[in-house]
Length: 145
Image: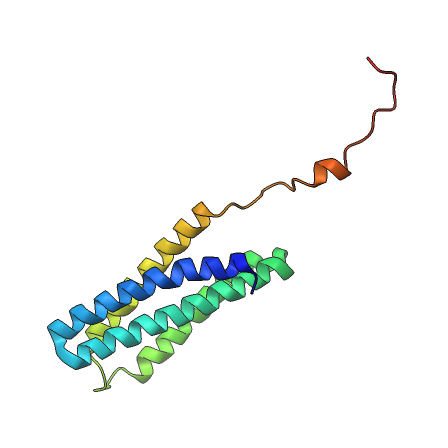
């Protein structure tokens, strides 16, 4: 993974993990051990889904830029379907508190999206190629003025 991609992933994952730790602490204080476990599962699931999604989108943008938008839409639909499958499989579980799971998942997802927006705004992305003006500049062929 190139350094810009790793930096972008790190700028999203660190605040999300910190917010997840707060959600785990609050859920543990309110709902006990099962609440803390539910918030931890929700946070880990959000970091995993969003991290894999960001990685896939960055790879797609570099290799197949014409498929970037379609890949983004497909990726978000796939993430929602995987989350629906996960929630359906664990809807009657007694392993963790489902409300704490939902809160941890929502908090982590919102923090990830905000951190990703901030990282994108802070990134220094060229919209022109600065080296191209040296190589593509036509030479003067007429008389000097």
